View (cartoon, rainbow, N blue to C red):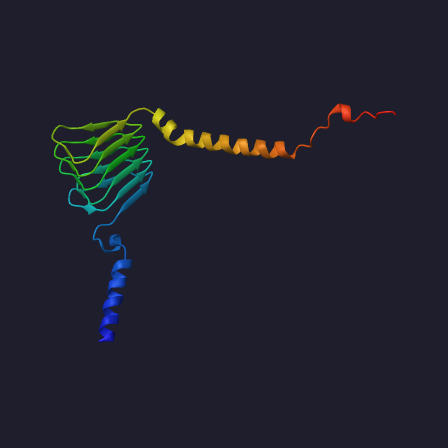
Length: 171
C-alpha cells in the first residue's frame, strides 16, 4: 500500500513540476533577422521575431510578437493569444481570427471589416512613443545617478575655514 502511495505521489509531483509547454504538441518559433511564415496546415505555439516580419496563414496557439517588424494575419489564420508589434504594422485580413488583443506601438493597425478580434485593438502611431516608453526612464535613472555622484563628491570636499579665525589676535 505504501509503495502504491509513493508511486502516486511521485507521479503527481512530476506532473506538477513539468511545464505545460513541454507536454504541448505545438512548438514555439523564434527568429532574428529572418522572416517567419506559418503555413496554412501548421499549428505552432508562441511566435516571436526580432528585426523581421511574421506572416500567419495557419494556427497559432499562443501569442505573436515582433519588434521592428510587421505582422500579417491572412485569411484563414487563427491566433488564440495576443498580437503585438513594436515599431511595425499589424494587418488582419478578412476571415482571420484573433482571440486576444491586437496592439501596435510606433506603428499602425489595419483590420479588415470581416476580421475577428476578441480583445482590444490599440495603435500608438509615431516614433515618439518609443522615446517616451524606453528612453525617458533611462534619462530619469541617469539623473538620479548624477545626483548621487554629486552628493558624494560634495561631502568629500574639505570644509572651508572662515578668514576671521585665521588672524592672530594680539594681546
